[in-house]
Image (cartoon, rainbow, N blue to C red; front, side, top):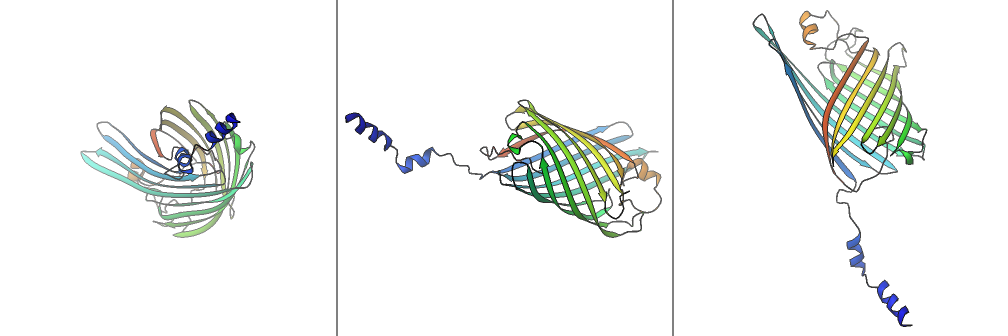
Length: 289
């Protein structure tokens, strides 16, 4: 009887206030903030180039719902020395993206994507996309911390307000487009690697299309700090935004405006530091990152 009495005293030794102290509270409530700032420069006797790219990403991810918003500002400057005269070319662009995804089950999800941007280089006073979407993952989403192969399809309304009249005699237009993307991603202790293929076309004329392939490697350096290497290439047949008129030699040499091309390729490397909720360990890859 004595032993039973002692056990009873032990089970009641923690008061509700003491138990509450043992529960770890997330003061960030699962919100995560990601701030990046990258700079690059190169030069020679007759040419100099510098750029600054900054971004802010805000997200809150749970198994049932995924919220992401990002904003970026890009500034590039080039200086040419031609016949002892300096030609200075600057480019600025702004970008905003918002994503909301609702989980249906361990393979399906639905949501929407919204994009807004402006760019002198791309001839956009204002460009927007609003696209409902649906996604299927071959592997259960519960295994996404190790592997995933996702198929994402969306149909969206694309509105463009151009700076200059385009080669198709448009100053603004509204179109409807479709996009299909396939993404494979695998994660290890050292980081992650992913490969994506994406195709897009307009409904009113399927000859306006593009196909893109991308790859990304993320290497963990220390807690919160990662080195990211990114690259890709695309086939382009939908440059509806090109300005009308002859292209000057200066525009070609300085690339002040976007030029007609049937392909492009790119790559980048940079550091990213993440802070915020350290208790938000939810893995939700629906609709990508």
